[in-house]
Amino acid sequence: MSSEHMQIGEVAARTELSLRTIRHYEETGLVIPSARSQGGFRLYTEADVARLMVIRRMKPLGFTLDEMRDLLEVTDRLDSGEDLTADERAALLGRVRGYEQGAAEQVDKLRTQLARAEEFAATLRERLARDQVAAP
Image (cartoon, rainbow, N blue to C red):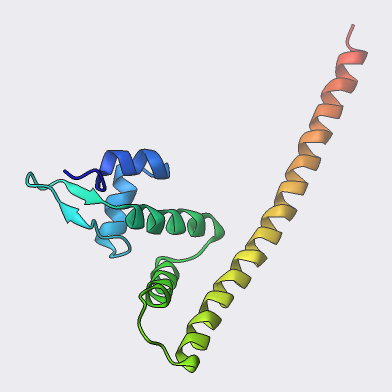
């Protein structure tokens, strides 16, 4: 095995994804191992890890597997070095912009949820503090 390839266990540790999740993403075509060892073990590169990190970041924001696949295809095309017309590049960047806007909207929603959760926890702490002072 070359030093540029990693087995699935190392990838799982680096991405904080389970082996099962990584295999699921392979089954759905989101991340295909770059190679296989002679023994048939999946081998991944830094590029594969980067793809998994994109997926890991999109998942909690509610993006679907199809949306993840689409964004990965768009970024692959932008990064391919392929000669793109100005219109093609603009269209691809427009799709990336749409995902960025969707992510920003979800971040705002999560901030609101976090603020409410913090307020609730503070209310409970205040209640406990008040009752501890009043306790005999």
